[in-house]
Image 1: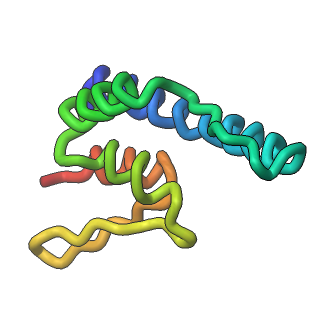
Image 2: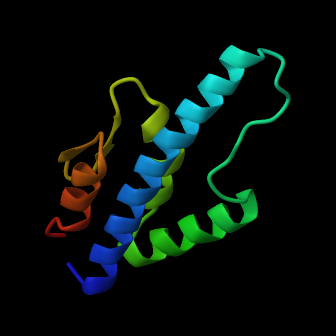
Length: 104
């Protein structure tokens, strides 16, 4: 694993943890006022999209966007099946790291 990939994985972990804080804040706002019109976001949507595109480029494939945009909202996580049939469970940042560090 390259130093850039290691730093990218640390960033994904931080983004994941921070999103949990924002999810809790939004849930608390909804308890105060169910009609609260806005959702508090961790980062501007355009900046987020560019950041995730860069993370995909550093880590390879589209693993960052898959994890950040899809897996985190799946009840039991996701998975990636390679052409040879090998299945990689993707449930957390450690699983992302295992997938990135795999032998191709």
